[in-house]
Image (tube, rainbow, N blue to C red; front, side):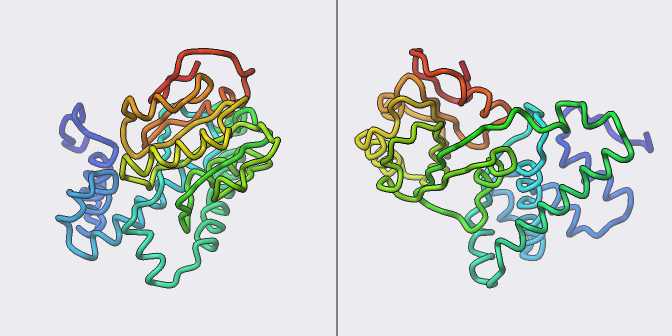
Length: 259
């Protein structure tokens, strides 16, 4: 098609970059699209303007995944980069305005899709999944734009966000998600998990722990049978369904194995 090369080794980013090139759109957009899902090392090789555009596209991509209500099991979930977090802070941007605008765009898109394709609302990739009733969300290192919390709020009528262990010491045994995605040092991760365990916040409930890396044995030793560890990016399509299953004894799980 239009002399397009074979796409067997192409990602969607490469395919989109090829399309932009054929349309003779600016190279800054081509570079940004190509690099938006690449490693930080690749992004550092871009020119300054391309890096900024890449971060904007990357953030928009991650927000759209979080806000889109369908249950596409391949949809990834990952927070915004530290670099873009610094851009927001240094530019005095209003994070809530960005989030509100993103919500409006997705709502308008879904409305248009339902109008153009009346059967679309019946499809699980568009239709919201079974709602989580209540989720306790613990994030010891809050972000100005918390993609995980945004994902939960799009699916859950009641997200109880806590930023300290003390806030979580209640009789509430609702399912819990612990976001350690932005804590990169293993010792700090273990310290956080140890504090949660010591406060008995893991007892009698199901839970998910998010890490920026694959868990080691030290992590697994701290996780009870009803909890699971995911490394980020993760695929959360069926979190709600799993979190609200009855609490039963099972072997500890890691990296996306929902039982």
